[in-house]
Image (cartoon, rainbow, N blue to C red; front, side):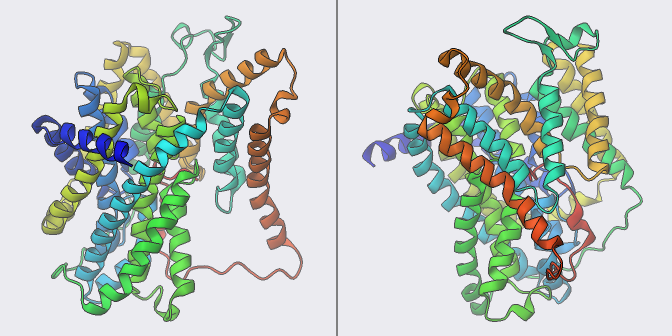
Length: 519
């Protein structure tokens, strides 16, 4: 514990320098501004800023990324409560009771419980991240290629197995990502794969290019297709205060949502959306007044918002400790690590100790900055929605194209971004989430590499994956995770099975498939 506190103290000493504080402040402002814009989640923001941060010190860049990550989690709830439009899919559950509270004149308490709950959950989540990530590192040191292959397979299984009511679509999305990851030269045989005779594809598709194309350009095309959608008139905010009864009902929901969200966020591929729906169901089941849910229950805002922000911290655990992204946003952050020549995983806490502890300290600071900034400035954030969509789309496309070109000075990268943007739009139009696609692109080369290493280690004997206890246990868990939704689906379709209850008054905007959603 003494060593941990010493590392955290040195992290705060670095994070509190003027340059890093300015980067954190810029990150939380940009993140919140992006969060209040429907559909533009933290994945899009970080994807666009990756090329812009080339000249920055890695520590400064990741402090900014952390501020954007947490800021976007905060901002998504503001429009969900005030205009019934979630900033991203993870805030969709907040519209159910948050907008009803706003319509009944309780927008202030709804915003207050959302922001304070986000602060509590973000802080608790960062504490758990600080405690658990080093422990996970120590456990990971006993892992070899078979265990890493099994673990990455579990990550992909979680994406498919926890893909909601349509796990088959999540599996297809992951498969598309894996196919994109195979484009280029096979490093072992030297054979080109899926290049279609195009020379610029021989080097493969960069994860940064994929992220910019799928999320940024794809989001612009999606916004254009939704231009006809009906807008909502914002309600009056009023005073951001909570009554004694509001506090009494909110704090247990904050705690339950924090621990549930963090535990869910650790599972690769689940994302904040899964955590918020789980939290809403838990709060409704434990409430003494379940009839209020869907009509303006404050617990229906407090719990999911806490779960959303805690899941953001939980997703950082497998990223830092194992090098496996827990969500679409952490997949983009993995690309950022790779861009700076840093490999997340068990050795990260020893090889880049200063960077990691400074980043963790900056997350505490970001939470405080967000609470201080957002409570008085919530009215300004709502006015950001007045930006015309065509202008906003033009800015996003400009950043995307300049960023893609600046990576290698290649026009081919710009064309690749456009092609992937069209693919991203087509997938979203067909009801697919983009998170699993990016996870497949990120994990594809890694899972292939560990698979080949394991076979080389065993002389081509496939039993190496089941003869080692840890690898066997993880593979069995992967099989269990993949089978659960299909078993559940067969039970629902069985004769005499009760119908699945639907949540009443769920807004149409809950169908928004954000780039942050990984399920």
